[in-house]
Length: 496
Image (cartoon, rainbow, N blue to C red):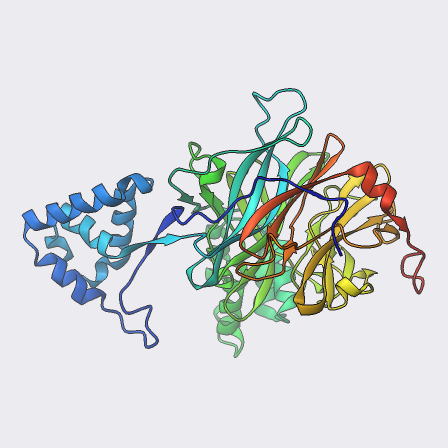
């Protein structure tokens, strides 16, 4: 079970513990029994004299200032989050307030545990390149303390040929800041339908909202609800559900002077509180032009949910929930364009079979058509996609992953009909890439996994996570891969 077609590159990305962000730290809230110690800590800081306060603050900036953007602004923000705990907040000097913020902050290494599960798309900036080169953006699943995942990025240049240059990833990181978003009524309606919320309160709100609306409009509509509706037994519960469902959509943005590798998409909602996992990016093109889109898994510590993001420039991102029976598991991958006017995605709604789902007029992903079930020995536990389908003249190239004995992962390939992606026309009889002795050990042993590659100059470029620890790159001549595939006959009429 060796990947005879795939050629591993020598360049790899490894976890860098120096890549740190600053998080809010409230003593006591990280304990098994939550009892904040914020007030007592602020009192102790307030009792320091001004000389000691200044010395401690200068020392803190000397130690940490070069590692972060606007550390003083972060300290000021964190002070603002806990200032209500100060008995006499107005008595604190500006220096003391910043020092309080420092005591309520800590560094978090976003990839101290692992770096894995990449996807690759053409970078927004294609300037200053030589012939045969393509600049790419590589998305990365970063895993830190507590198995908390976030989405990071790297920049690389492919070509000419099989040359690969990965840009330096040093520099202070930036966490995206929440910004205003225009919510979509149809997504709110789909979310309420999924939660089986259909009563006079929800119907009144949906009827009053425009197709696109901001937070102020949403709250105004809720505030204008008649009292006799709110007094019903379901009234207040429906209001809570409306706010919770609406909050699933948000936007985050980064300063214009941040480089792509300095940007971190950090969990920003309760549904994401334990991680944003396995982003599958694709450059989607339609009549309005190109747009970066991706799907990812939101995890709250107990439940998973599929989310989508969209960005025109990889600087401002809009996140929205994905709804419907086709979006009820991990591993959704969007097609890079519409097919026959339909928005399509690969999915694994049953947990073990690759399927094709269609977005309906109410923004719900419909029950999938099965494409490929576990069949070969290396994939008998489950199969799934390794990113968005890649368009070729021969058909849609789908990279797959399968799980075999000892939970060993491997990567294979399918080919779908260009006009009728419901039809599998060919498959690779065997494995394209599997773990070898050099990459089988790590955070999660015996895994090779990708969230998406691309074709450049006749070569398939496949970034992959090795044992959920590091990221490698492999290349495959597209012509050789297609030539190695064999025809797939219809199965039970599903592929015909």
